[in-house]
Image (cartoon, rainbow, N blue to C red; front, top):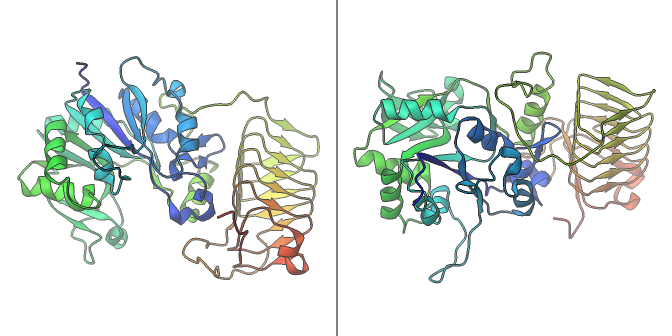
Length: 423
């Protein structure tokens, strides 16, 4: 039997419904980020950079693109004979077939996978955060304190603490109590959803709670372990960490990459972010093109002007087109003389000539104001926007649309245009 000191279980099944049409056909961890990456590249790269070479990736919702992206793990140097990366979808069992119903239920269903490595420690990660973290330092902290569970925490402003699971600790960072989204928080240490468990502790907790519906770490496993007197510790992380769970936080995190001094630096030699790269030619910039403070993916051709934007791979931006404060994902084609302001355009979309996106007053979105807000205009993947139309702010377009869908060539701010059958 192979023995690994620590293996990682990466939860990548999330639908990410607050990203609206960006995740209607793809799991949140597979959404493009920062021109050339996908969100899951960050925790996977953290594993490799931390010396964790055995990673189980638990997929569920729309897993195809994620599975293709990860493949056998070559870009992350995770194509190992022993260990490496394994994609773990829910599977038919003879007794009862079931989807993963909660974060801990997904781990429980893969107990045999973990058992096969007989690890000392299991690292539980989420596949949808942007950050760089050395899990080895966290493991050292875990060992030094004789912890059975260590929870990574991050100090947040006190007024925001009620949005998180909050850990209350003593002066040695031992957890004495915790509260889920408390009205009156007693601490500002928010759980990051990153855990190191002693394997024996984790296994016992999972098996003792296996009949629990929607088995969850925060609601069931952590309270169970705490109640049984196991020592829990909080490991404080003070680096950059972003949950890109909403369109606005996703937009902000992309924009932070192009700050003059980026808070999150993709260019550090010692902590590389690995990804699956396609074989593409270099970028082409025409003599008329203008680019300021932007990231441009390889294979992209620019004939227009791009300001303060993140442009993916294989994108074409036509002559006379101006793009500002926007995110344009891979293989999208934007015609000539277009104007895009604060737009998020998903992969493989075609925007015809003379289209204007993000024009006009801000009006709350008519169907999902909690998703489409902050003045962002969102276009879902593989969509088509016909020539000469103008689309307002906080609006969303998804599907192959035609001129008839835009009365007077106009889709006002706050409107939702999703073609039937494209949901």
